[in-house]
Image 1 (cartoon, rainbow, N blue to C red):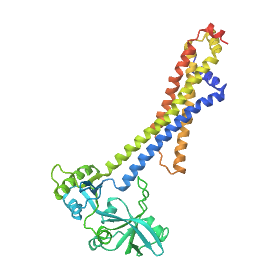
Image 2 (image 1 turned 90 degrees about the horizontal axis):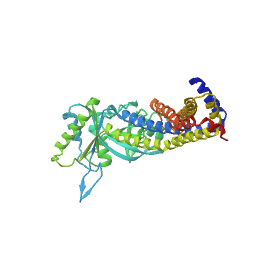
Image 3 (image 1 turned 90 degrees about the vertical axis):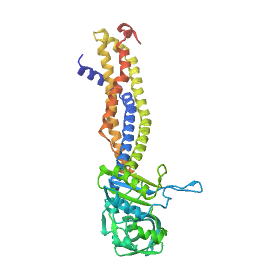
Image 4 (image 1 turned 30 degrees about the horizontal axis):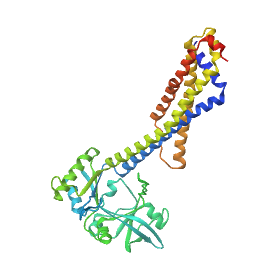
Length: 406
């Protein structure tokens, strides 16, 4: 019997019990759809993290104040006061491969403009920060080195701060706002940046000279962090190691003692977050795989029932000259058809659910061709693996006993 004839007979057999065929495929459809949706969520989250890291600057190195011990109690990260503006200058002048450097001091504060007010993050920084983060100024300009040297009361605001204090698309250049009762003149507005990988609004920020934040808000001489940009992506690790050597020398840290600072590259941060995302994706895919397993068992169960119901038909076929191999192929093709149709519909369902999550819930998703290929391959393998035993059982029936079966 030709494979085409076998295929036509299998399709007719499935059409005779349309409801049972649909319910059998339902388990496969839900399983494949769930797996593709979960994998798409994981891929989307990973891509979102990579995009956020890229938007922050591909060659960025973060140097932050470390911890210190007081009275036997270890304080947390950022509590050390040993990171100084001179450290930033040393990194700029002594470390080869450094392109831009910006010292930083942060402060949360209530901001007032006229009868409007808004709580935002004041980020004291240097003039190189827009270059490090590839962040353009949309209106006006950034403050100057002279502003940093003189600790001028000038600032550049993000679009969220502008919208909350002056209204959407307003022009606040030259306006004066009060930050903790200190008047600051707005000299620029940054272009929209959007949310970070952790969901933080990057546009809800006010940039001011770090010297101004030191003197007017914090009353300190040290800094909290230094943002560095390497000249080349290939030099990031080498530059980070050189920064550690320079700072250990400047801080007179003896060999074997812990650093009082932390040097991190965005690649390190991305790797940690991506690994966590992959773990969660694997967990969700495993849970979705349970429903896929139910679909597999359902196919095997239905094929066994079909063999029992069609025992006399099988006996008749064998009696008039059909070979056991023909019967085996007939039932195997039926199982494969069930699996493939269910798999294809499941792929469509998974793609639709992924698009729906992105459209209505704004969750990033990405359906990769690899996931689709694996899902389709699993569907085909399911039909062969779980359909083989019922097909083998059918082909091994004794024609005489099968004809006598009631």
